Image: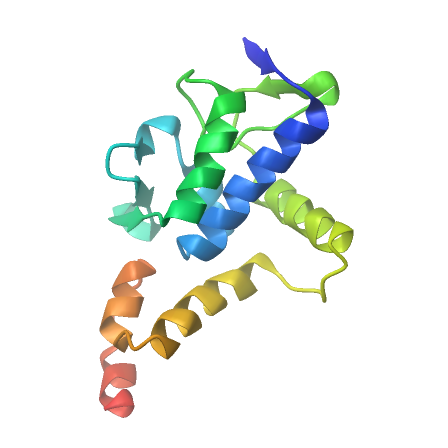
Length: 159
């Protein structure tokens, strides 16, 4: 079963939500496409992210990121399954997992439309971490927010 909406409007909402999770949540492409609707807790604006090696961590979305996700969910509907789904001609949404390569192409298409200098989704993760460090967060906190294990060698060299 699939939902339907204006293709451009649905794709824009989906891509904005994915972009918000990449930058606003510091998630990797593979983490974004692995999310299910059940991984989103709207009452806390929280995503439960399943990382490498059976690890889990929570990501709390800021107002802008949550707003983008809520807009996508308005189009997507509340059917269980993958959070980020393909949108086809006529705005038909198919409730199957988008591949991380497809997400890469969608983000790159939006970058080109906006006439922005080339960047990759991984650059968004680095920006997330760098912006937190610039705002005064310590390295261990940034690593935890990004779902990474603190690298003790890096921590010692950062002191």
